[in-house]
Image (cartoon, rainbow, N blue to C red):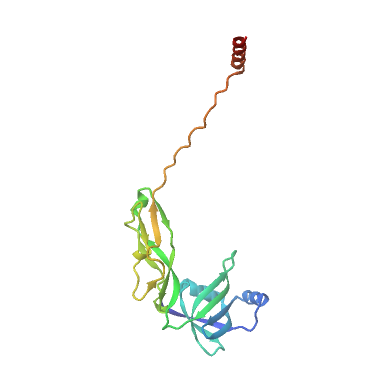
Length: 216
């Protein structure tokens, strides 16, 4: 994966009020942390952060150019908090990494082709939409493709069916189902409710008189 650059600034204020003030200025409050370092509060331009995510995805490897920070660490996006209504980024966490040490990351699965089982009336169900991989930061794939053009009704494809780039390992169980085509269950009509015959009033009265005559 290509390494990108992002300019950030250190921030001295913390708390919800300070965060709101930053957002009004078009900035996103963030934190960089990692092994052996104290958490570093940062401020990131919201527009530049959106461009970074759009271009590189969530597993992008970033070189942070910290204003007045005296260093340019390599990081990955660890956590992004979004506004549930507007969708804008509220906070971002960066994790400092080493390009020579392996990391784990979630990689999306992209289905290719059309499953013949769907044309036969089956229903396609993608059970697993991403897998966890372990590799060097620069080797993280943007996505993993899975060809479903031979998938028939009643068949499934598993994690073991994914083709991996060199030096990339999936930590999920190889037998985990990614996608399946199941047969649509036929609807069985419900049985008609039982109808209990009830004698008409005249018939019921005649039957009662007949029974009385027999008893007499």
